[in-house]
Image (cartoon, rainbow, N blue to C red; front, side):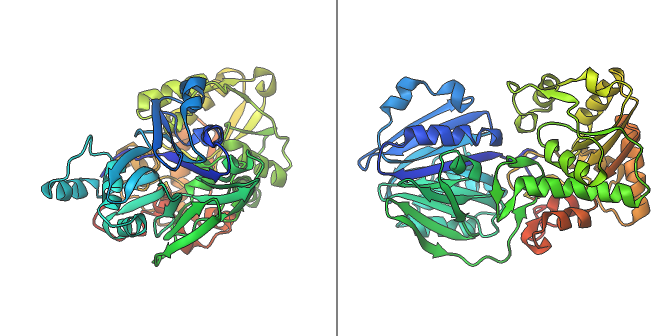
Amino acid sequence: MKSIGDNCGVFGIVKETDCVEDIYRGLDFLQHRGQQFCGIATCDGGRIYLITHYGQVGNTFTPHELENFKGNMGIGHVSLKERQPMMWQGAVGEIAVAFSGNIINSEALLTEMKDRGEAFYHGLDIEIISKLIMQEKNVVSGVSMLAEKIKGSYSLVVLTQDGIYAARDVYGFRPLMLGEGRGSFVVSSESRAVQSMGINRSRDVRPGEIVLITKEGFDTKQQLKSPRRAHCAFEWAYTASMDSKIEGLYVQEARNNLGRALAERDIAEGGVQADLVAPVPLSGIGHALGYHMISGLPYQEVFLYNRYADRSYTQLTQEDRDRVAKKKLSVLEYAIRDKRIVLCDDSIVRGTQIKEKVRELKNTGAKEVHVRIACPPLMYPCNFGISTRTHEELLARRFLANGNITSLDQFTALEIWVAEKIGADSVKYNSLEAFVEALKIPKASLCLKCWDGNGPMGSGLDI
Ligand code: SF4
């Protein structure tokens, strides 16, 4: 099992005129999904143009490079881990492929394919996906073959001479949506990239759906049977941007609801004596606002967010994450001196960052810090494309070695233990039941494996 998964975003567009500026801007709006690599591929009907970079879109692509892209259709990718898109020649013609997700059985697939004589550059997931697609006589059968071969998650785009194929694995782990307007047809990991172009979000790509996008619009080429949906619940709590909408649910609405649930629990348990409620920016903002709406506590920013710092969760190593976390936020002393603070955040992974935030607030003069966490305690690492830690690194798992919370007393004991570990006056999480209720999406349609260990794909690979 990989301890760190991929975390990335895809974008694609077909329009009447040159599209590279649109891809560039679309990727800029998906940059929060991965900052290590970025890439663009366009097609002018004759050939495919491709450039990838190490770094962020806005810092790496030069005006000269953008001018040299040709074509009115293309795809783009931002990534934590791999350079994408990748370009290939085969029986299906010249194609460029990019995906968001993670292949759990990549080692087995690599071995099988190498035994058959296939050669690989680095054995990356994107190479495996591309080669599986190219083994078939056309892109649709190649993409549908992925559902049989791959254990894991993929939301992918394939640029061809005929248009862009967009597809989602049969569980729909990672988001992928369609938008249209102003002569453009767009596919994107998140709706914010579409909204930024002033066009409408049309719908989500369905789990197991393979769509061809051309100048005529969206054409579903195949709909594979989906055993069940398993949309990543973490998208609403943390990963996605607050201005996006996934599976009909606004991310902001979900975060407000999660904050409301935390406040309702506090009220039901006698209330917390505090002067203000504050977020750990950025993902804590929606949660803190929801808490404020129910509790009536004044909402106050207590950290100033450094917009020039990289997002810590998408850094590959813990050292990088800690380094970025340190330079990301500075304390607003005026707001917190002698105050009792309810501090809202999305989740606690290792606990090092929230511990640092509590320490900074107290060292700067806060009287009390009560931490409220939107997600239930994280007990299991992700196999489906999000950069969570190994079992051993997860703070809550260090308290409960088997990962199973079996009673309210145990849940409360965990919260008291975590509060001690991070130096907070109290810690409360949403329970899994409250978390699911706040999302307003049927439990059976969500992946909740981070919390209950029950991945939708059966046992044997920790899935
Ligand atoms: S394991 Fe967690 S992070 Fe991964 S897809 Fe499931 S809910 Fe999302």
